Length: 173
Image (cartoon, rainbow, N blue to C red):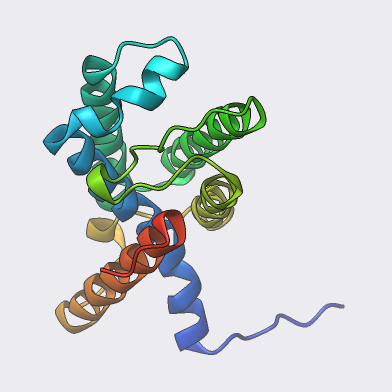
């Protein structure tokens, strides 16, 4: 008979935060695209897609999916978040391998040239969303957290989003 492993509560909480950080990053990236769609236009045109209109559409999808992840959660939603990050990774890998010299435009003016850093960051962020699939992580409103823990979660998610943004852009700002 197998004995259940009891993990310390702080470790369980830390693991539980991972998908929320991936969703929060979608909100930040989406807002950046809505605010400055021209920053993503070159990479979209390189792929044969409409420039600024495409950036506005992608930004809108990111905002909606990020918000649904944070509020509703659930395995299906986290699978969608992970799939979106994997799609970004595939597109950026294709551009990088084809020798494109454009910036990704993911975060407005603080973007970096398409390359292995962005591909790895998107794959890594997809894995964080995958934790939500594995654990069937609920949205924050259904998580049963008290007010104190909710405030701590939001602060930790903000740190996670900032860390992921640095991983994606290399810019500490």
